[in-house]
Length: 473
Image (tube, rainbow, N blue to C red; front, top):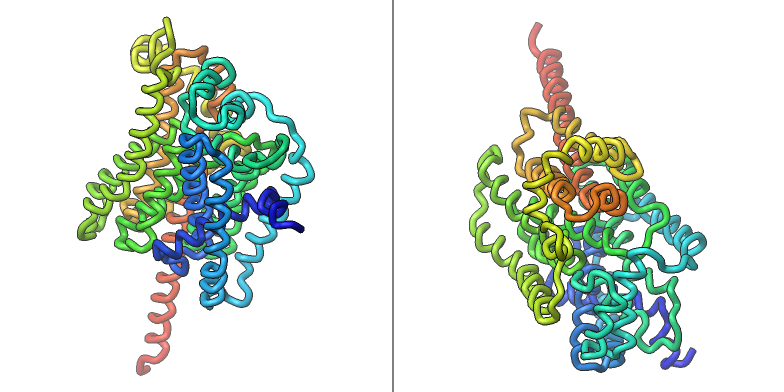
């Protein structure tokens, strides 16, 4: 195969994202051994953000093809260091049943995606929001006056954050024709990254087979099925990473938190507007966890580390808002034309909608396994088993995030300026699913505490019986 052909192969475009992320992880000295399976997800997120940033810069320079060469040569340069680092890592056991299950799950998911859903045409929001923005960038050759003209005519919600369209543009650079099936794969990659991250995070809290059941149930309910190339999986992974990193930071494990919090938050705000609101929920959850956790937390320098973790996402939000303001575009929730905005509508009609919304929330999300994976139920029930340890920081942090995020989304629907039935039907269970993996993380932590307590009690009982048997008679 000629080199000129190789560099345009779709699988090579995807591999470059992972290589760039893995190489950058090495340069940033990410503790891959401590992260375990989560390290692969961190590399994918880091690579996606870097590739997206490269496409963005080349788009402003109106030379999209330059991104192909910049990323391509960067990936080739990082290939040898990444291979050497993998060979040096001797921490992977020869046989791990949990890892084997994860590999089988990945293989099954890839086959299903390729065979059943590869040729699905783009439609709905996938087409009118995400793909249409990518088309506008490619057809205009970058971010110029032609692109700005497309926004008002061909792109719905042009104010949405750009990472998803930028990755679709990355797949199309240098291609002679559209190939819709491959355009989905960068977005699908976040589902696989989420599987690996959830598996690693849950396995660090509870042993198999409980870990395997939790991961399999959450992933099957949330990520298996017809999945359009939207950005919900990106938000789900970003939230999981940020919360897991926050728990590590509050527990004094700064090596894990150093990359997971800022990367998770950056992925959140670069994916959807909901991500910015969830980042605020995470910040509040960190503050409240420090106040209510028992025993009290004593992690020196935590304020400085939290502020540093929020600098990158804050800069991204500021950039997105500045760009939208320069183009004169905004969110339809806050600028709905002649209708009341979100906050005014919440005050005016929120109370009247509450009963209806709670009924739909229970019917379409809490009691719907395919939407919720019963994550909140399982987490609350698991916490009830360890009520004496319920104020531990590693339980409080995901609990506050899951419950706070749920409340936030319900408030948005209570105050939506759109028709409530339409808005809930198109977005309700789907966006609430952003919180599923954090709820499973919460449940895994509580179950792990319960199992450890039972194990300690059995050990103490056995020691007591041993002393009794050996005492003089």
